[in-house]
Length: 585
Image 1 (cartoon, one colour):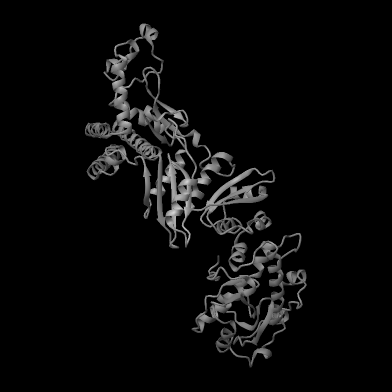
Image 2: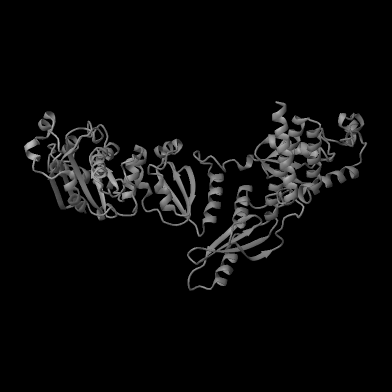
């Protein structure tokens, strides 16, 4: 938006309820900055399509009018010699314009006219009100195609819209012609469902033809929380989104605020928009996750491939080992697991962190009595980092005590492993083995992130039922029912209905969940983390709880990130290590 153009303060006003003042100037030259002056002001005040006032005055520019200007406009020095100067005419003109809260200024090529008026106001110490401004030339370039008009000059547009007054390069005639052009443009915008000042402003700033053509799809959208689905002509979902106000969000796609190229590509394919109204914003957010997972819409980037997330788990072989897996559907909760991770690289670092202290086997062959007779131990056995169950040097009972220790670190108490890695990193740093120390630091970070994330998810997926309440700004209460990490129902209180009845109805009508022996018995990890974020937000109150909702006291998150002294030690180690690395480099 150019500096001359004011903002639209009252964005909800309908066009037919606004007072517009259409202004046109005649001047001695092309630029106020080069000393050119105003020779004539013409203005027409309109509201609801009706003219309610006109203003016309010659202005003495206090300089000779160039011959070519006289030829163009017909205004001579003799016509303006007895006219008021701009300083004398300004009070009357400002009075005609009215208040900036009520009036919208319209001009054809507005930067030209507003530039002269603001320059004159500044020169003569007048305060120019912050009028909202519409430029009919700019608006026409966005509304009309080149097939309709060869250019957007006022003469061309007035002919196209059959203006009652032809522009003559005289201020009042040109202002009258601009009024008819303005009304013609508004009529065209009305067919696209554009009826408010905000929509015209957004439209005139930047909007594609596809957005213009599909603007009507945003009509009749409810102003409520929910999910919206852009669909093509075959009813295939193109994009799924959510909002606390569906009407405002969907309409925003058809304004200049939407600049994403992939969204513009989507508009060309969109045939209709479906909406699902939800009782609460949380319900809308969860429904969005589920629909993206189900529909796999091509224009959604996130949440499409939750089944491809990387996890780390202790597998279920005779002699289990740590493995990376994509998807959580095959993982049982009691195996011992952590994640999800951002990628295989982070998962591998976490596995390496565990191996630094816990002697789980790292070889991949399956072990049985037959294989033990022909196998030979690897170097890890000589390094005392593996008990060599592959050759029978370690019994199943002995090995499963190691597995139980690993499970304990993953699910219950991670302190010893984290402290072990911190000590190792510090020792390597003191020995100036900075690259090795940095690797241990990365292993520790990956382990802590994976275990913390897994423990948070596990804390909620083990809860049979959890009901919460939070008070909204409206004074009504919002209730949520969660079972085994899945949102099964939500509701809002209603004035005049007992809150207890609302809660009872919510619990009775919420989805029944049958738990499975899985790390995610009822939902996806993104849904669980969405619910956890909601539960940790301010103002949440616990209404009822079946089972136990808790985090391990000595879990990775609680001891590592919440223990102030350990966090400071870790930060100090990293600061020293980074400084030392810079010095050696």
